[in-house]
Length: 312
Image (cartoon, rainbow, N blue to C red; front, top):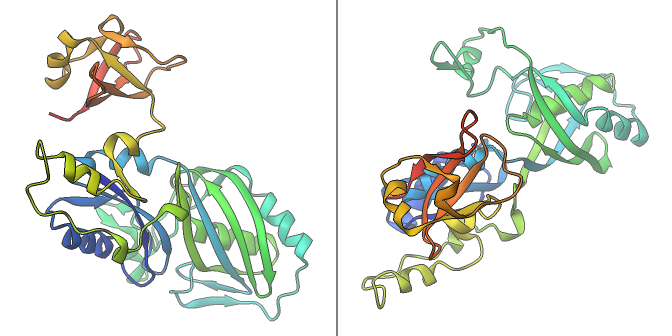
C-alpha cells in the first residue's frame, strides 16, 4: 500500500497521533509524516505509507502556505497561545495600514532565531526539553524565505494573514517579530497549513474520510482493484505524489542496473528533461512507465545519474 495521503490534521492531536490513526484505519505497520504540525495547529499533514515513507524528505523540502491568526499585545514564552504570557502591552493602538506595512517588511529572505520551544536538537536533545527546565540555549540565526505574505483581516487585538514560506520557517516566531516591528507584542493564536507545494487543503481528507482497505483478493492480477480503490481525492500513488518532479525513461537493458542501485549515463536514457541542473532529483522509469527509482544528476559528472532511492 505505497501511497501518500493529504490529511487534514484536526486540532488537539500530535502529528504522530494522526499517523497512528491512519495506520489503524489502513491496517498497516509502516507510515510516517513529512513535516510536523503542532497539536494546536490544523491543516495539511502528508502521511506516507509503506514504501512511500522513503519520499518524506522530498515533501518536507517543499514550500508551505499557512493561514495564521496572531494576537497583538501579548508575548508568550512559546510564541503561541499554549505558552505563558511573559510580556503584555497596556493597550493595542495600531492602524490597519501599519499592520499591512509591517507584514510586507518581512517579505523576501529574512533571518529568524529558532524558538526554544522547538524540536531542534542541542547535544542530542530537543530544545523544548531545555526550555521546560528554564534553560536558554544560544541559537544561531537562520535564513528563511518569505515568498508571499498578505493581510486577510484585522479585528484587534487579532490579525489574520496568509504566508507562503520556505522550509524551516517558524510562523510563531514570525508573529513575535511582527509584533515587535509594530512596537508591541504578539503571539500565534491559530494556525492552519493550507498548502504544501502542489498539495492544497481543498483536497485534504479528514480522518473519517479515509477509505478502509479492500479485502483480498483485489481483483484480476492482485493489484488492479487495490489501486483503483484508492484513486480518490487526497490519496496519491508515489508517482502521482511526485508530479512536480521531472522524469526520465531508461532503455530496457538498463533497468537491471537501476534496480541494483548503479549509476546510469545520459545515453542510457530514452528521454531527458531540459534544463536539468547538477543535484536535481528525477523520477526514473522503464519504457513502460514503471516507477523504478529516484535519482539525481551528479554534480562532478553531469552526464551521470546517481540512484538515491530504488523501489526494488
